[in-house]
Structures are given as C-alpha cells and as structure tokens.
Length: 390
Ligand code: SAH
Image (cartoon, rainbow, N blue to C red; front, side, top):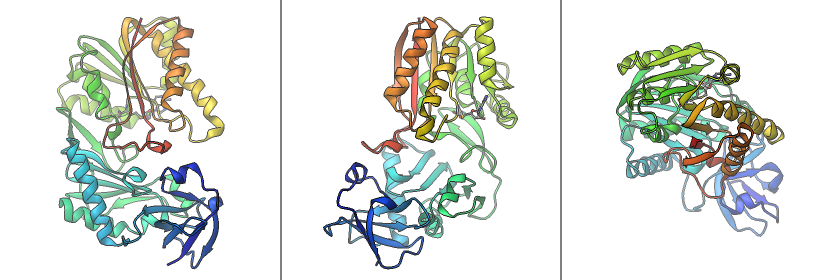
C-alpha cells in the first residue's frame, strides 16, 4: 500500500485528529498516487497515523478514514460505520429524520447522508468517497430497506476533486416529492429540486426553541425557504406569520406547507429580496413581536470574512429595529468561518448601533445529529440565537 510521509512539523489540525492532510504538509509519497486509492499516512519518524483516500488533484491530498492499522477499508467498513452512525442518532432520540452521516464528524470525510424517514439523500463530495458509492448504497439497503435513495451531487465543490456535478436515483426511481414529519408538523420536501439535500435538518432541534415566544405574536421570518420556522410559528400559536424568500419555488412550497398543516390563514409568504425589504420596512417603522432571520452563508473564504460580518451586522440591525420593545429576535448564521464568539460580538455591535439592549434567551449550535468535534472548526458551523430586544 502507498505510504504518505508527513513533514516533521505537523499542523495543529492533524494533531487534533482532524482527518485532512493537505499536500503542503506531506514530505514524500512512496508508491502509487492514483486518485481515489487507499493509502497509509505516517509521521516523519514513521509512526502510523491512519489510512485514507488520496487525490493528487485536490489540495486536500489525503482524507483519513481510520486511525486503526488493522481496519481494512472495504464494503464491511462502510456498513459498520453507517450502522454506528445510526445507533448514535437513535441514542440521541432521532427516529425518522436525521443527518445520518455528517462527514468528518462521523469519520467519513466528504460523505453526507440525510435520512428522511424511508428516503435517503447522499452527497459524496470527494473522489475517494465517490468511489465507495456502491458500498454505501448497499449498506443503506441492508440497514434500512429504503423506499428510495437519491444522489444530490450537484455541488460545485466536487469540481475541486475532478468530479462532475450530478444528481439522480441510486435506487429504483420514486416520487422525489415526499412529506416528512417534524415536531408534530408535516412538511413537503422536494429531494430532487430542493436546496442542498432538499431540507435543512440542521435547524430541526432549534425550530422547537421558538415555541413559547411566538404565542399570539405577529411574526416576520426572513430567508424562510420552505417555511419550516414559519410553519412552526403558526403551529405554536402565532397570530400572524409573514415569510420572505427570494426563491419563488421556495415560497410556493412554503404556501403548500402552510396548507398541509391547516395554517394557510396564519402563514403568508412573499417572494422578495429580504435585504431590500428589511431595509425599507425598518425605515418605515414597521413593528413585529418576533423577527426571525436565517440567511444563506455569507462567505466561504477567509479573505471576505470582514464583509460577511458587516452583512450580519447590517441585517441584524434592521431585524432588531423591526422588533417591538420586549419582543424577540431569532437569528442564525451558517457561515463556517464566523465563529460563535464573533457572531455574538457582531449582534451586540448591531444592538449598540440600533440603541437597543438585548437579553439572551438561548444560544445554540446545529442539531445534535450534526456532531461537533472539539477543535475541528468546520464541524461547529451553525449559530442560532434568540434574544429579547429591549
Ligand atoms: N430557514 C430555512 C433555511 C433558510 S436557507 C429553513 O430552516 O428551512 C436560506 C434561504 O435564503 C434560502 O431559501 C434562499 O433562497 C434565501 N435567500 C437567499 N438570498 C436571499 C435574499 N436576498 N432575499 C431573500 N431570501 C434569500
């Protein structure tokens, strides 16, 4: 088997057990470096570090799959890992829907699997993981007897690995417009054409956190996608809910979700640019009891973090101005590079500018089926904050 020897001074990330080895961290490679092959990685003094897959075309040369020299990477390996991942989610109380595999955090780098009850959506975002798609599909079939498996590899990041963007069935074809249950509600999910894997499971625990504050409230939800938070707000007793999203498709689905739950009189939606509308309405002095913000990621690159922070400050400032005294702001950020502290600092700066005082109700991360590993920055990506705005 090919051996990859690291440079003497290895990065803090590798010491922390993170499974990525960048090309510039490698001293020598002994043997074949065909993309997708399994290789062994050693420290400069020949201590075994782990086994993983190599891709000389990628800046991330190797991603480790195991730290155990005796463990072979074969079909059984993927079956065992998926079984372990499912057992972990079950222990946490997930029964129907969950992120079954959260890539690195499940020691299956570049693999995402979302479980929507009997349906599964897969993303293989690196060449070495893409190779194992048949083994992953067969493990899912053995473990769950799924009604359908769908591939959502229409993701640009695959091109950095020399892979094409594609989507399609990995099982017999099925109707990809499904209905899932969440927190007592029903939600339409479009596995084929929805954003990412079709639905944002990372917020499913957080959606329950709005239960008490939305009761009898007039609620504004910006960046609502298919109205998951907004439908919850209606279900939890909001007086009125207005959801905003730039995507006509998302808004149409949000309206269907309102109907599906008998909330079409309460939950209304508009397809608009939320940045413009928040600016305009805050100037006009509109007021809501609860404002919810869940924008898309603002940056993926370190060079533009400052711009992202300015963006967060701006929309949260507008959001706060739209909150009645004593009402609540529910605000999220999924930008990986903006850490929890940085996010809180930004919100506090916005409050200062808006001349409002904040009282923190809760500050959470993503749902626990998306595990966070200490020191592995990219596993801790979602910030979810509720504050009372005084
Ligand atoms: N809250 C949602 C997820 C939101 S994802 C949920 O829990 O399911 C971010 C959303 O912001 C996407 O639906 C995207 O269409 C929308 N979006 C992106 N830019 C926008 C803009 N300028 N105005 C309004 N919505 C926007």
